[in-house]
Image 1 (cartoon, rainbow, N blue to C red):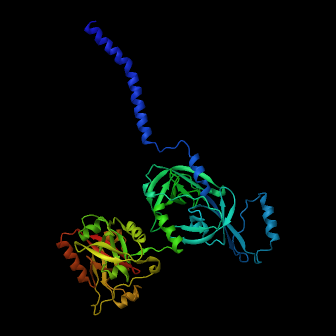
Image 2 (tube, rainbow, N blue to C red):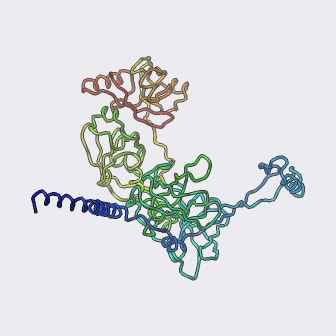
Length: 493
């Protein structure tokens, strides 16, 4: 056989082999992708069957007193066949000026059993102010429930039913293991339909709505009214979230639902089960996030941590913490922002002595703080700085877009600043200035500049000059408004 014929033979052989090679490669790629997506279920039926016995419907009733003529009447479209019915009904129940008997208001929600002896988790708003709570089980039967404890801060509640038979229950899972894109399944009582299943994915993690302890899992699994308090399951049948809220312009699901993470829920429920209430750690500071301009103003290389704006009487003050400190680590964990610190402190045992590293005057310092209990300290108002005695007569000065003057007793009375106001009061703010843009207004009181107390215009000017000499591009001011402190960094250029 000639060399040429051998070449042709090899070419023909390769041509015949090539389609098979392409198919083989396609199969390998498909198998690889399949392996990467191996969590995709063919059906949720087995999972639903496994966990359904532990999911419950919750019905509550509340007595609502009706004063004579109080409350809106029924709204019936004009010409509706119900128009005569409601007119006759109202006439049978007496004229509007007669007192009406209390009526029962009912609400529906969801929950899930977490122990065979009858502990049930739901949302606080499902059972709030309820006179009676009735639990309906998937396999039939109803039992009355009592409230063991509630936590409005996380909208969680723990109920208990009494039964001689052990109940089916579901375990908690670790929400920190859930990744964006993972499959999840929600169960509950949407719109009173009872024991309904919906599926979707984890859309986002670490969402905050309005609370200090928020750590919501966002999901596109359908969640509607009545789903509140129901479980969000991972594919192992573990509860990784408690369905709580939806974002919707029309009241129905549009694929943006929120479930309180099990990381938060397990700690809260454990405390409710043990104490009947929450017992959160309390550091005793007021804080704000560190922005880029604040970091520059205090010489902090990275804009992270929690900036202490006030230290009332409490654990932090006893440990030597000062306003202007930046909390960098708490109990060995780096602090990125205020939200993370609040959650970590709240989850720490009361009475525990923790090491807190702070940034102060260009250096770090470690303080040992013994935590108090937040619930007993809430509502405490920190005392403002005492007024300086022997202050000179006030003089106005225009500094950094602010018209300021020293606080006097008369000025404090005229501007309703309070008897304990001290520092420099802002009389006017240039609306074209950075100070106005950052929210400073007439009536604000400047108590610190460059983390040093100021009582006169000369004090403020001296602090500004020191910042410029140090090469700072901005200066940090501590502002009080209605007694509430806040740090603001203003540019010096």
